[in-house]
Length: 433
Image (cartoon, rainbow, N blue to C red):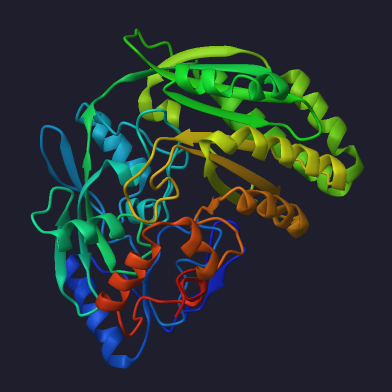
């Protein structure tokens, strides 16, 4: 037997069996076999979730055989669910196409990113699930079904809206059809700003920018803002050396060294962060959209992220800053903030409301459960919804109070998977048994 371990190294499982299906039919056969043998079954992606959402001790399906673009149209593309986002971006670019918005990690599979609610940041366009037009999935009885955004029946539309961010609880995703558009350029402007200044102008800077992302350095009043807006061109990407310097050396190699020093000498972290803040500088460049959206993350960390109503973002940030100062925690990693418009996917963290995301990270070798616990108390008090793929302690009782369609999702799950073939310990906690 082989162990499955996630990217961060904090989740692992040893399944009884592993299969690598290469078609929806092979997935259906695996699901029927699991049912007949009394085993649970899960399809894992590339392990970029920090929770146990993909784990199973039963039959684990691997995604490597379900890859590639299957079909294309003028404004849509259908791809196998195990395709990594990186490969999809590159293939779309070759065809002169692009996704309208995406997150910054490209190692995820399409299914893994959609099922856990990967969102990115956007004023007008939501996360990946909001760009989905059609899903193909295998249900617990082995049936292969296709559901569409414009489905003809209420039952089909309900399954579509529930399954887009479905946590793998309703079926195994085998193919996804995305809405796409002609390739476009983004102008990226990076600028240091004071947190106090940002807190006083949140409405303005979110309204003025198509894609706003900013990072607050704890123990300082400094943020790095990233404002990405569409540009007619021409492209002026950074040189190969500048790209290596910023994305490989500064943001990964040197940052990893600073994290290592902070782990050994925690008292030095405020000074290290102050030095990092002083070194930040403004920059601009224009490049292909997916190259602006995405980034490289090599330093291993643990992450908790909460989605709060947009109007409560400033309060959430102030309380988080005050808590860190009051408790005297030494935090190396920046706190990241993003925004999205409302979503209509039932379990999207942005369902039904303009949303802001606050993500807290900790260097993997030095976990700090108290930090996450303290921030989580703030976020839940403000009606926050935890990212499904990132660390949290919320259960079905709490989640039912912040998701208007939560009971509808559970009822649909009861109908489609009454024997909990697709369940695991994580789903038992967040959805109930």
